[in-house]
Every structure is written in structure tokens, then in C-alpha cells.
Amino acid sequence: MNLKELLKDKGYSIVASNGYCSFDNGIKPVISKLDEDLHYFEGLSVADKLIGKASAMLLCLSGVKEVYTPVLSEAGKAIFEKYGVAYEYDELTDFIVNRKGDGMCPMELTVKDIDDLNEAYEALKRKLASL
Figure 1 (spheres, rainbow, N blue to C red):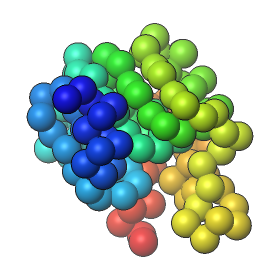
Figure 2: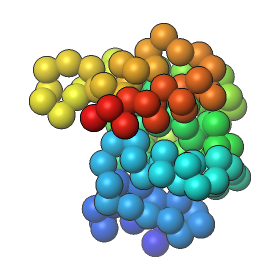
Figure 3: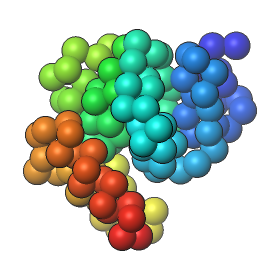
Figure 4: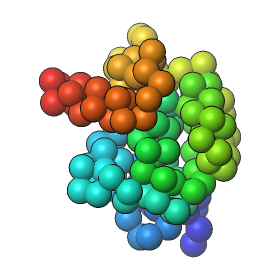
């Protein structure tokens, strides 16, 4: 079963080619691995159910090779293009919507005006800690 099938058929939020998978929502399954090893996703293929700029920046910081997602934000797409990461998506959206459905995802909002990957990582860790 390939990563795309695992993501869709098993209900994971993220799966990676090294066997890592998680049901956690948002950026938690990515940032938790980066907290263990900043290069955890280096050279890996990843499928994630939703990728915005925040997830894209974290995955690029970690050295991901390629990504599939059913939903990708315009800002996330721009990050993958900037860092030369191969990507595939089913739907492109202006931005990732928050859980209430009434605005931008707080993580995407956190990195909206940040261009540096390390700065984004630190800002996102602070944001998660404040929730």
C-alpha cells in the first residue's frame, strides 16, 4: 500500500516512507518529530491530509524529499516551490481554514509573514505552547 492509500484508507493524518504515521491533527505530528531530530524527514516521502504554509515550512526545514496532500494552501505550494520539494495535491486553497471554519488556521497565521524556516519553527513552537 502506498502512502496516498495509507493516508486515505487508514485515516492517518500523516504517513512517511520510513513507517512513521500519526492520527494527531495539525502540525503536532510534524513538529513533535522535529523536536526529536530536526532532520527527521530528510530524504523521505510524506503524505499529510492537510498542508498549509506552517507544515510546508517544517517539512522543508527537515529536508523532506516529496509530499502528497489532498489539500494544499497557496502559501504552502509556494514554500515547496521555493525549496525544490516535489509535491502533489488534489485541491489548492487560498489558505487553511481554522477548525471553527471562520478564518485562517492559527498556525498558518503564525507564519504568514515569516520567510525563514528556522524562525517559523521557533514561532510555531511558541504558538503551540500558548494553546
